[in-house]
Image (cartoon, rainbow, N blue to C red; front, side, top):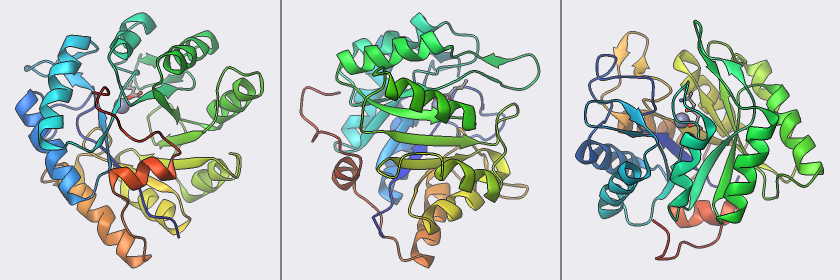
Length: 279
Ligand code: KMH
Ligand code: ZN
């Protein structure tokens, strides 16, 4: 089977140090968590910016600082910047960061409830706008889908020429308001994308490692990290992002899947080779 691409979502915008003290906020903490995750096998770091007090931000100067700090420790890793930001941020604020020379960024493919009164808004026009902006700026999109309707949206926009190949999906399952992360959900989604598309699976909370195992067994790729899940097992906090990546590596061994380096991940995803002008 193809080598396994591990993405590590090291911090997110919603979890805090109160949830797990390893959630990084500062540039030093981000660089350390990214480095440990990369050393453990992550080829891609999914990044949200935060200020030193933990407040999420899409400020491009802050992203630049954080990315440079990560780059010093991980020269080759793929840095995938979030254009989702935090719930409640408007779309212009969210994509301000794409003015930086980025290699990869998320493209959130639909609206969903996000617990309580929160709504993560991604209208059809937002999706078209972000897709167009990423295309113009030469940034590789990762298509984040939180339920099946989001895949249908991608396929419609692809047919109409608003979204372009290569299609690399990320199924984010188990959000309170999105699709659950049961095995049947996983199979429904993976069978709903074109056969030449690639996909990665991110399970929220208790879904993280069971979904990772399913994806590994079926030739998909995997995202783990404190953004999605703070526990290594029921009731036991993960000892940093690298512990979650190591758990994926153990599963990969069980299914005899080797781990992709960043260069191998770029080839699998049909990305360009990294050049020095990219942050
Ligand atoms: N923080 C969530 C509201 C992304 O990174 O693109 C959105 C999110 C998706 O995390
Ligand atoms: Zn995210």
